[in-house]
Length: 174
Image 1: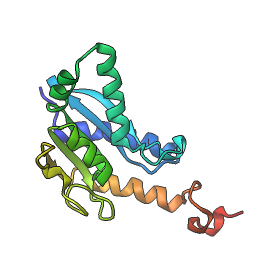
Image 2 (image 1 turned 135 degrees about the vertical axis):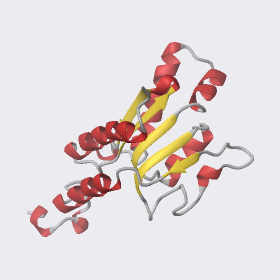
Image 3 (image 1 turned 90 degrees about the horizontal axis):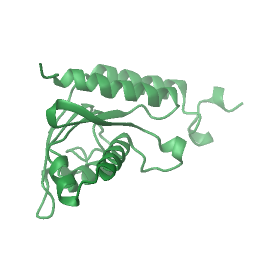
């Protein structure tokens, strides 16, 4: 039996909850490869790493690239493998992540909630369509949106203790 979209998304939500527990913006992902197997996962680690590029998708890509390097795949083999992968992520990927996914020629992206401020799959830019130098990929939104929204709401309601003082609620300024 082939797992369905919601099953893979639930694995992505596990990563999201790990991010929330680590006081990161709660976004998580899994990458599914050949044979419908999860081959990598990631969660936001921007605060932990003090690096704004450590989004869930980028962490998942890093895990996968490391695995394939250890296996000894050539660049051509890595490119071919990426073109058969599907990303499941709890929030619409940002412009940076969509650009990376497009350059890697990922096959498809499923995501939960929209990202109206930074989304690269149609909110701000439509980088998933590709161009002469990149192959495009399909996006499908709205997978388990209520849980994605709930986890983000929980994060922002508790207040981000890592945010600049001017963005924290008064209860955290003590």
